[in-house]
Image (cartoon, rainbow, N blue to C red):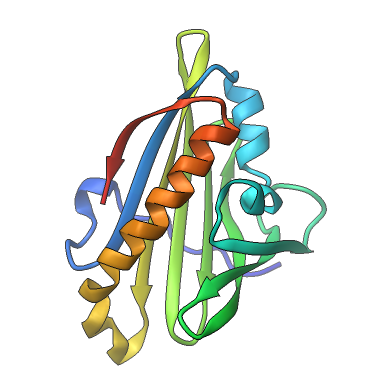
Length: 167
């Protein structure tokens, strides 16, 4: 199993220079149904138009330590990132982290009860590694465009409505 990373910072403590995008979707799905769907990272390609393909490369189903190769549209063509689930607290929280030579993506998903349904919050932080980190602020506009498209897909697949976005 891969090492477990530290938990992400709370949204109000995210460095303003980081590329950050969060969306909350209200859905009629129950907490357990919403969590079961969103915790399976192989579903990314169903709702995020920037994701070409996902394959599970470690683990058997969802859970702590499971890993997924996620191929996204990069600036210079397809880029495959390996996301490792570093926190899995069913049916509330899943944290997945991908690290490459150049960047780190930290995605935190929370599911909360809301009346007869639930809310799903997807919070993503993208940072450049090493000296490239000086250019983090330049990622934000492009990350917002990518996030808006993914948020629309999440809203559709959850049969919900977006109630908040932060970028």
